[in-house]
Image (cartoon, rainbow, N blue to C red; front, side):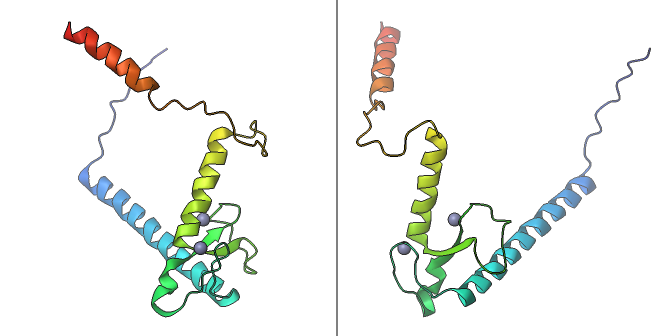
Length: 137
Ligand SMILES: [Zn+2]
Ligand SMILES: [Zn+2]
C-alpha cells in the first residue's frame, strides 16, 4: 500500500492568467446578459417603478433596474414574468427586505405586531467596557 503524496503543483503564471481570462470573460458575459434582459424588460414594461410608481425616461432611465421576482438572475423567461422594473432605491429596499427574511427564517410568523426588541445594541459595549477596565488594572 503506497500513500505517495504528490506535491501540490503550484499554479504557474500562465495558468493564473488563463483563469483570470476565464473570469473576465464570465463577467463580460454576465454584464452582456444583464444588459440584454434589461433591454427586453424595458420593451415589455412601462418605464415606471413597480413600487413607488416613479416614471423614468431619458437620463433617469438608468435608475430603472430589473428585479428578478424569484431572485434568480438566471431565470429570464422571455415573457418577462420573472421581471419587475424597480427604481434603484426600491430595488435596494426589496433586497434588504429579502435579506431580513432570510436572516429571520420561516420560523418567524409574518404578522407579528411590534416584535419585542431582542437586539441590544449596547450589550457588546458593556462587555467591552468590563474587559477594558480589567485590562487597565
Ligand atoms: Zn421606486
Ligand atoms: Zn432584484
